[in-house]
Image (cartoon, rainbow, N blue to C red; front, side, top):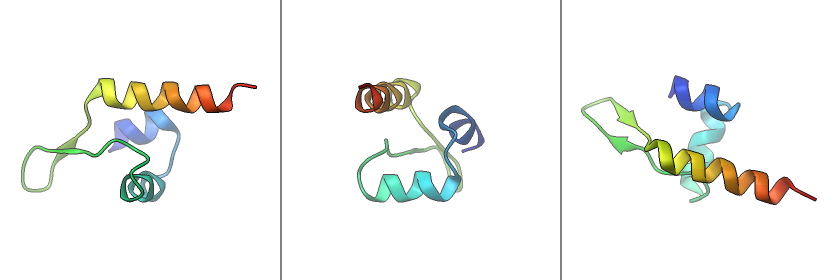
Length: 55
């Protein structure tokens, strides 16, 4: 999660809110209390954000 917060500049709660709304990639469970995100999914999300922000 720390890497995702750093990578997106979003707060942890915001990320989970976006996940719940289907607007951010879902994490992949790795274990009991561990998750990860596929780098390509996060990169695609960032590109979509840039596309929406461009004039």
